[in-house]
Amino acid sequence: MKYPFKITSVLLLTALLTACGGDKKPAAGSDTTSTSTTSKGAEKKIVLFFGDSLTAGYGLEDASQAFPGVVQAKIDSAKLPYTVVNGGQSGETSAGGLSRIDWLLKQQPLDVFVLELGANDGLRGLPVDATTQNLQAIIDKVKAKYPKAKLVITGMQVPPNMGADYANNFKNIFPTLATKNAMVLVPFLLQDVAGIRKLNQGDGIHPTAEGAKIVGANVWAELKDIL
Image 1 (cartoon, rainbow, N blue to C red):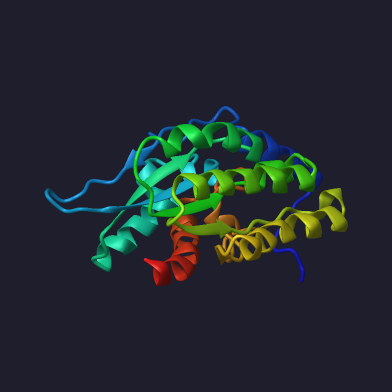
Image 2 (image 1 turned 60 degrees about the vertical axis):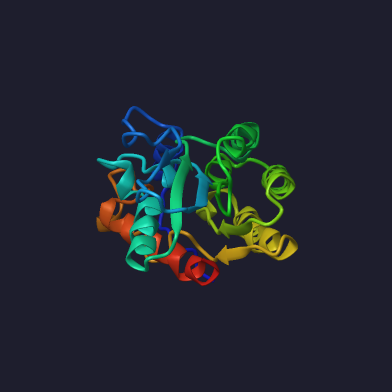
């Protein structure tokens, strides 16, 4: 399978900087947990999106434009009793997520957990084994705290600048974890967005608001059947 990105070494360096936050401001509220408004008296189940700048909505005008916000709009349109909580933080690695997950799990009940982490690990060329172990540890913590929660993991890919073996091993992290933990898998989060200039911001990595709508649709295609 050909990798969908066409990235030069210079663009990869740009990606590394922007993935870590760069000097561009993230969307309002993107580094803190935010919950959509619920109707008065309605009991809503919680869908926690836990991830990095892609979840947080880096560079967008408002956090509601990020793909979790797109999913919330689809939930509302379907009149389903779920509230999305955006637990994204720009620059987050799998190790950072592991250190942060306990705090988030204490904040509210949890019914569905969507794990979107690993992209920054891959862009930095961090060992695949370490990323896998960190993600599994996050999953284990969620299972221990909320054993009845439904689990979703979003697949990610990296450009082959560091070699085809690394790219393939990295891509395989996500289906492997999904199978091991009986998780719903979104095969590739950025399907139909990655490498398409008009759907990405100037860094070539983070989706525009229009791109985020497609990302949200990618997630919704797999998530809707378990809500």
